[in-house]
Image (cartoon, rainbow, N blue to C red):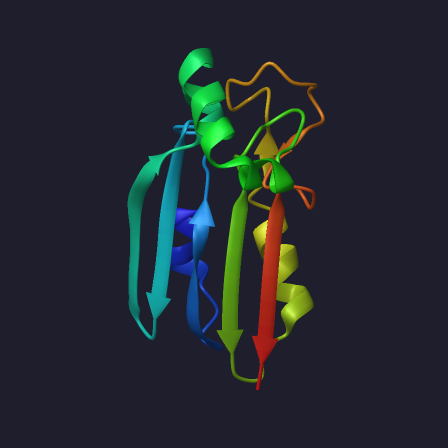
Length: 130
């Protein structure tokens, strides 16, 4: 993702913001922000699913709405980006982001080999072009 952002980020993108997860550290939630030529990727805390079982149960009991987006294989891990651009080919940008997906097994997970980090069920994109 970092290579894509640094070397292939479309000029038509005006603003982007959201959370993502990476196979480099599949327990960490990252916050991505971009405005113009300024981009930042920072750690945003651990995903709930990475917590010890008792702590996870307590968090879920206190904030049950987390389960609204819960995936049976990857828990609350997801990539959710909002991308705003001018004259942007939304399908082309989505296709480029899809190329960055990796398998959950590769990311260190215990799920099936074909489950994808950020796959359409766990990657939510909102693309808007003016």
